[in-house]
Length: 345
Image 1 (cartoon, rainbow, N blue to C red):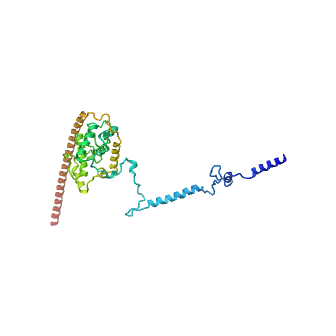
Image 2: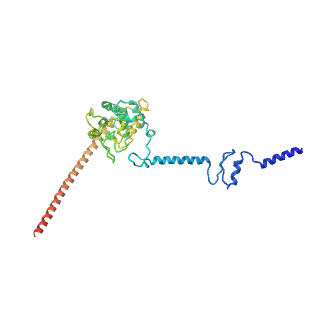
Image 3: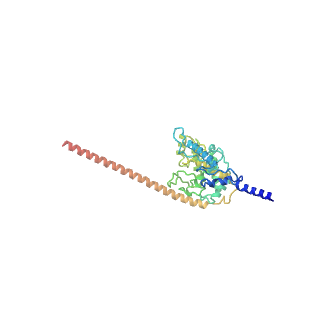
């Protein structure tokens, strides 16, 4: 019994005075300026905070961050070919993350055959605007684009996609109004200028296709010219070069660097539509068309009267300017004659 008591006492003393493995990390820090320990659980080897230094992992991340900053600065301070600093140059937008674009879209030509079907085009319009309010049904406007575009060799599905972009799926809402049947922004230069107007949807579609022909072809359209800006556009393109690809419409047809991408995005949405006739595709809008024709006639008369007044004002101003010039010349002559008479005396 005495031997057992001695053995138990020695074991207890060893447990009190000798450290147990795995407890060193917890005992270190409290004695050293009350700095906290970076815990690694109950495992040994935890690194305490000493003299304001961080752990090794943080040191590594800081060093890597410094390296990244140096490389970024090096990139920012690069110069272009002309020697100008590109420090404030904005990063290029990744258009594929913004728009749905087909492969090689920059090389797709304005002329060509349709990829989407008429029913897919109708589905896209109906999904965004069931009552297009232009005096014809969804089916009729789709047929018109296919008929007019195919006659000139223009891609009808892409031309219609451009019209949907320009008109907001025939919701309009800008300076152009539905009665104008202006589906591609002809003559609209902002500041409330409404641009060209056409009596029927057929004329509006034809003018749109003719304007595309002016951009991409040496030949005249096969139909009678009704596009009021055809000659200007065609002469400019003959002088500066034809635009045969949709991507070339950026900064030419519209003052934007992503205009063509928006057209392609609309077209890709069209291709994703079901190849099936939507409800209300062939609703009769003859009464609506007659109402729009009356509005068209009234508005065009107002435009003509306003132009006449403007021209008259211009003539009156020019006459007044001529009269003022004559009076000024008379006063100058009188003044010179008086001076001559004074010198003789």
